[in-house]
Length: 353
Length: 154
Image 1 (tube, rainbow over the protein chains, first blue to last red):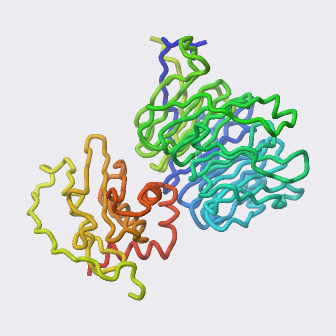
Image 2 (cartoon, rainbow over the protein chains, first blue to last red):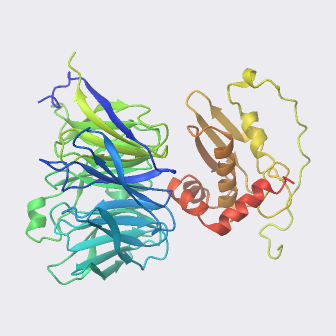
Image 3 (spheres, one colour):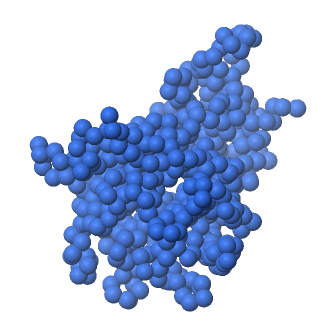
């Protein structure tokens, strides 16, 4: 396979630039129910211009168009957006301290619920795999877990106060109801509730003493199997972690995530985003305007997994890259967004020379 | 309002004599520290009716530029060790530079080593892009920043 062939040459081809937002684009999300078979891919993006934009690729022209602008709801920057696993709902987190839930009602996106409670800016929102739970986090240092009730009602199930600083991102494990959060306090926390007790508590804090990051941790991403995760930080490194997934599945709350690799020396400015593709390619977006790709290296001289740089795309954007997200439908297609106000769609292709 | 100033008696220095800069914009394509200093030296201190230059919070030596990479580093010296206005000064510097320089310039702002009791914590906050963005959306803070930047213009 070409990823293992260290002689293969890759290039990142720009497919299209999506313009429209009038301020920096903080985040984006591919609708997971689209982009396969006969449905056209859809992306939601959110911005400092207080709006969320919905983009769809035309079946006829293969060109991306802006289908909707979700405005007049959030009163401040929209920091993060994420679709529910079924693709039916979109959650948006804002500096206005609220999280809005949107539903596509006959082509028209309507705000069907507003989650309040955080004391200040909400930074991130995440749905669990079965769509029964939502998590949000904020500069108020807390992580909230919400239960999804019938009729688009949301009930707060837990308010977690473990982090000592601004919480930057929350992310549910891809298959299990285990919640991960990362923070300005440099740590990553792992939270779960035993069975259906609803008693959510922290079962692990990954800090500097466990080979953790030495500055703000901005993002977390899991591999397809869910037994590894990669984190990115203001400390200029990516770190890869591994856990015994079978142990976790059988309900063992003593299972710990262990450090297996630190990718250092590749980035010289803050790394804001990292995303692990189904195929195993790790993409990173950083404050030096570049996008980088890493894969596991089959280096027999090193004991244990190691990672190598597959490709560095300099000047991917004119300003900081805030987010990178692989397409769930198409192979090796990536979307990125930047402080320059644009979203770019890319294809990672092999250069046949 | 001047009640309860953090540093009621700052030391005020004379403004440094300004060297005439070349008028032809073409001969000054490369950005140098003095170009940057000229934009920030007159920013008013949040607490006192003096410029950052007059209070020795900033000097030309506290600015370094890598024009090729497009990186600017500014260090500033708060007037006292426990200055809680440090983050406001940092915001003022950032907003001013954003206005004067093309967006691709990366700006890092730090307090000069040993000049603040919580140096590491302050530096971290001064350079967290998300925190800066949120702070500038706060109308009270924004107003204070605008006063520091524009009060000289009348």
